[in-house]
Amino acid sequence: MLLESVDTYRAFTADEPWKDSELDSKSFPLKPTLLLPPAIPTKIVAIGLNYRDHIQEMKHEDHKDPVLFLKPPSALLNPEGKILYPPSSTRVDYEAELAVVLKGRLNNASPEEALKAVWGFTCCNDVTARDLQKTDGQWIRAKGFDTFCPLGPWLVTDFKEGKQRITARVNGEIKQDSTIDKRIWNTAELLSFVSKVMTLEPMDVLTTGTPSGIGPVNKGDLVEVEIEGIGVLRNMVATS
Image 1 (tube, rainbow, N blue to C red):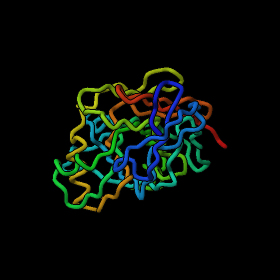
Image 2: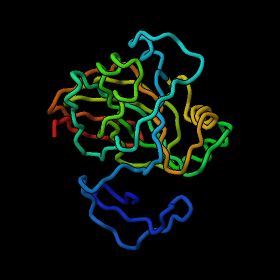
Image 3: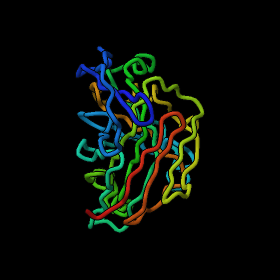
Image 4: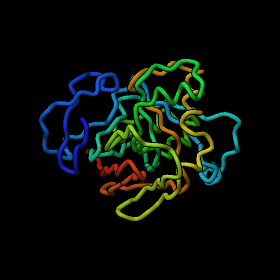
């Protein structure tokens, strides 16, 4: 879908709109409950520890290369959907992140080649069961629960990375507040690095790390991730 205004949209007529951008001639009313994540990925590749202030707050050492982990596609959550608090965890955290969706296949790509494969950018909340992350020592369970990857609300195809503000709010209170230029590696560099580890397919998602200020949420909280030039991703925390 293509957003026409605050309350209307038009649909793409092709399954691969980056190849054929023709739109349906009819406009439709937009309801938040209609929105789905703006990608159907084969995998979600996530980057850890890409802001130095977050490295410091997590008490990690600096690292030579980007830190990679995977979130399963089953973790995807709609904008306005409910983040489900797993009964096996006692601490669930928000993590505001800039995410990218691909339109092309990448394998062993240069940063310049990688950037040409980008379809657009969106907001992500890399929800994490922090207690399980510490217990396990690796991150797949802590970050892989169903609903632990809210994505949206829009895919912005003309977004140009600069000094856009990225924030996270819990019940209206700002918890994270930074700018995306403070990342250690930018999107092109990250995509190039990942493509030398695994082949990336069209519609795959890359999340690019979170700034400092991470913290817990409780059942009933409203979590908002906002990136300047993209929009606000809103999700409630619930048990069911």
